[in-house]
Image 1: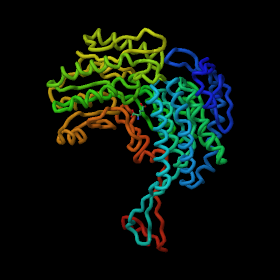
Image 2: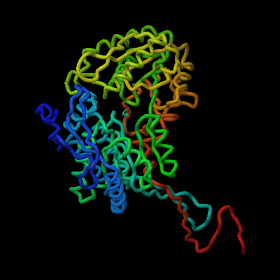
Image 3: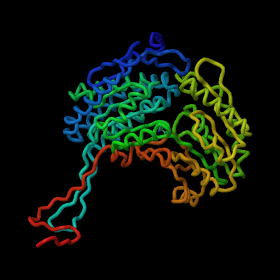
Amino acid sequence: YLIDDPKYSFLKDLGLEKKNVGVFNGKWNANGQVIQSISPANGKVIAEVQGASASDYEACAAAAQDAWHSWADLPAPARGEIVRQIGDALREKLQPLGQLVSLEMGKILPEAVGEVVEYIHVCDLALGLSRSLPGTVFPSERPGHMLIEKWNPLGAIGIITAFNFPVAVFGWNSAIAMICGDTSVWKPSDTTPLVAVAVTKIVESVLKRNDIPGAVAALCVGGKDIGQQLVQDPRMKLVSFTGSTAVGQQVGVEVQKRFGRHLLELGGNNAIVVNEDANVDLLVSAALFACAGTAGQRCTTTRRMFIHKKLYKEVVSRLAKSFAGVVSKIGDPLEANSLIGPLHTAAAVEAYKKTVAEALKQGGKIEFGGKVIEREGYFVEPTIITGLAHDSPLVKTECFAPIVYCIEIPDLDTGIKYNNEVDQGLSSSLFTENMGNVFKWIGPHGSDCGIVNVNIPTNGAEVGGAFGGEKATGGGRECGSDAWKAYMRRSTVTINCSGAIKLAQNIQFGD
Ligand code: UN1
């Protein structure tokens, strides 16, 4: 167990042990399967987490629903104060929690710390929101009447997160849900259970100090079975799901069957469109992070590049050079020199290999990379493939690895068309120096994605905006802007103080 190695003493700073309990509902108690947490950098076991049994889930859901009543009765600014304290507790554990993310998920330390920062940022955002949640008053057509919109919490909600952002995506949901007055049951990815336990311990410490029931933020580590139980549970008024399009579609249908709400954050197949007037220096630097950063394991990673014919050769060769420059920096994500860590699992390496082989079979050419790196852990080379058709099934499929397809385009309109022709609609970016192109790109006939960037990578969004995508990406929006609305229900309230009944639309009914 890596936890015994003093090199990883940060695990103990986070209150983790060799055997951990992965279920929390105010008390820590688990009776389900024991999950081994594996470090993708070396394939070794870090520590163990005991997950939830069906009745453990039941206890979590019941406790979260129970805790809801007192939580919803707290004024929103008082809930905001709790979230503020969670932000501060995260600040205190920024380094060890970042190190754990790096060790268990596999992303490099600066990015791992960055995603804890993302949770902190969303706590700040939620704190402000807790004092500014809007409610509208509309003019009533009837004298002495008032027409207002009142927002109330939903109750208990379920949060299902993926391995690639084991802290931030929980944080987006949890911080906003908390100020909205919801309680939650979190089912994290079963390959990042230690992060989930460590985060929940941090949240628990704040709740405890303030005498708030722990089940306001319940945790249920588990696999598909626990996820299914949660999705089918009518007590979970909203299910926020981040993961693959295939599973998300099932989640959406299941939740809809019981008329629950869902917030889906599914796959992307993000493109950069390079117009003829692009600043190539800017582009190459952005594309390196966009395509190869996080070893291609962001849902916002660039997977397709549509490059104007005038720049095509130059861009592909400069990109290949810049990929070559980082190969020596592929390594242990906890080491200061590393820029790219491993893929998360052995299965992901297989998917990478299969995709590269298939691309070659279909006539693709590897401009750079294409190989698994011979060392312990799950490392692969960032890979550039040319020669495939813009609409080939491979190009239209998301492979969660650092593979980018470069495709030549004759003009911007074609780039936009190709950008939009996939099922997914998460993120996109245009490189241009021309304002007219920018307006076209962000307009009705431009990119059809939820995230539409200009001269920056497709990945690395800030928390202030709404995060999410269209089409097969699921349509959900999390984080900033008005994403809070997904966590509340709205009542349209008409109040009559006139002393007389007057019907709308001037309807005369009876005398
Ligand atoms: C994800 O990959 O699931 O925009 C989330 C980004 C990050 C969040 C990614 N802020 O890349």
